[in-house]
Length: 385
Image (cartoon, rainbow, N blue to C red; front, side):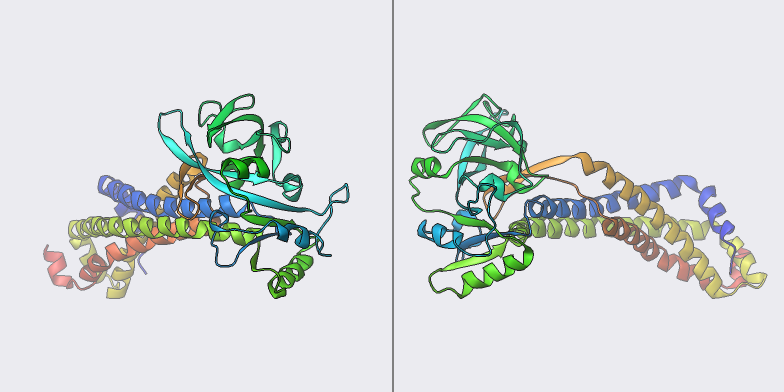
């Protein structure tokens, strides 16, 4: 086996071409890793809004709360189930909620769709992750609203003490809440009856229930599905929010990986050109290595090691660049709810490992043909070069 210091010396001797190749590979790895982090960020942002003890009930066939209609009569019947947890005051933790889309102007002069959620008295208690960080909860029976933290400053009046206008009514902002980065942070919460009257929606979009445990949750979901009185579909809250993220995350992942594949072809060609240049510049050296006893497979392995090192260096560079985006935030339209959501680039160890492997594989592919050429050189022709 040819010593590794020979490979490092060769790469350093041609550091300009080596550096340019590493940068090219790193840019492709950056796109690849950033796309995976972005898709993971969408899934994490929405799925983190769910509590495993909570159950969301939608009308059968509905894929989101926006497309669901639930009769108010179901609310009392569901609240009497033994699996339902109780509040400190002894009331069942059940809330009928209404979800509508509202169009709000932004500070930049454009408009965006925002999810407005009509809530019941127990909606905050059902969701322990949702906490007020400013102001107070809206009073039942009033037009008061609370904003998710992602909406603060997004439009004129989007702050505590401000006022929003939609559905031809004024809605004073009395509170701001956070949800540990979940999808609720991109919503406006108002009294369910006032919101329903404003949009002429007498029914509900969903019923959310907090059960005593995950075992009680499974029992409650089975009870609802087996009861002929209810034409409802029961889902755990994390499962529901994960489904809401699926389409958008899949779209970004497929589009981004396609772009990464196109760019990777150029990066592989760049690595191939670099390695061909490396081989051509030291044909005599390779001939000497063969002359002193190194076999063809040793020369082949040596060139492949160099190209793998180039790819791995590009992978590290691209992964570090992608990590720098973790503090960025993006807002876009969720295809399933037609409302704006906020999310960021969320890295995981698996994504970083995938980035390193992707870079290394590009380097190996780029070095394959030059390595074969180097290994097939005859000793006499190489020494004469």
